[in-house]
Amino acid sequence: MNIREIARRAKVSHSTVSRVINQVETVDPKLVRRVQAIIQEVGYRPNFQARALARGRSHTVGLIVSEITGGNPFFSEIILYFERAAVEQGYEVLISFADTETRPDHIAVCAARMQERQVEGIATLTFGMEEQLAHTTIDVPVVYAGADHDLKGVRNVRINYLPGFKDAVKHLVDFGHQRIGYLSGRMSWSSMRTRFDAVRKAMKLAGATFDKELVAECDHTWEGGALGMGSLLGLPKPPTAVLCCNDVAAVGALKTLAARGLQAGKDISLIGFDDLTICQFTQPPLTSIQFSPRELAGLAFRALIEEIQHTEKKTNFEYKTRFVLRESTGAPRG
Image 1 (cartoon, rainbow, N blue to C red):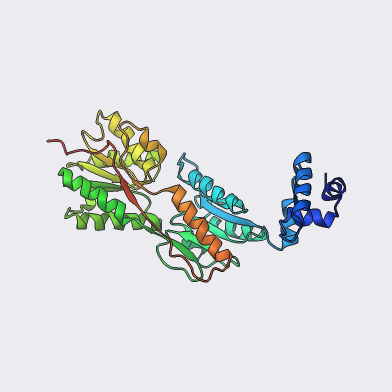
Image 2 (cartoon, rainbow, N blue to C red; image 1 turned 90 degrees about the vertical axis):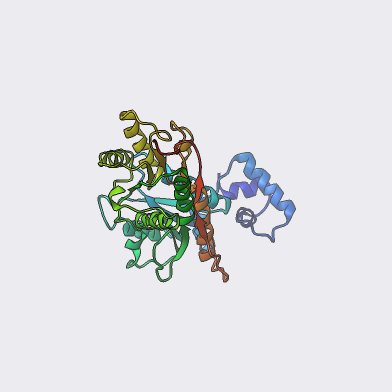
């Protein structure tokens, strides 16, 4: 089925069918209804690429995220909500995974591949790896989220990590915790360094002592969290509370606690970061700092559309983390 056959059935010219499909407003409403009825009847689907060529626009945007091996659901949720936002505005999404584990420059390769496919803009939601693009020529609008420094010509959705960590540390100090540990992610990632700095500042604001001995740098995975918690528990004077760089590491930490006959909230307080859905189903339910994939994806898409449409007055997008209390925290034992 093609537009000429639809035109024959609707008794209009094929150019009229084309204008209806492309939503040209000057077409007579009666003709629009007639053509749309035929399209629905025969189940016709327009050729997206042909429409893009006709309009001179691809109506496609690129999304680069970190690889999602290891079972971390954070980036899969980013993809879900970014695509929902795009589809609502009539855009398709081309997705690439920045596999920097096997190829350090892979994020630049992803961006180049997207430009070859005529995307109108690229959102790079890798939260720490985007600086690899600083010396890469990109001819379409680019949006980052959480970049720790401003890059010329690039839009950045700022992330304020401090509010969530500030409330989390205050919560622990109010309970009476003095030895507060931290499971950090890879400090080679700018986002992990920024979170680490937010933890130190939150400790200072709460009047708590920041002890470097109580910081375990670990891989921000299930296994990394388990190993990191084991390292902290092996100290001569272990922490009575532990903050984690993400929820995945926190769940790994819960496994180590369970293996040693310890329970979060009673024997040691534990706080994650991200507030993924899994936090509601751990035992006990995990207190966390909300870093919402839904909100971040929405802000990034809105910022990218402003860049694509050359909006004169740009919105200053900023995401603020929030503390979410559940049952994995309590007073220190003894």
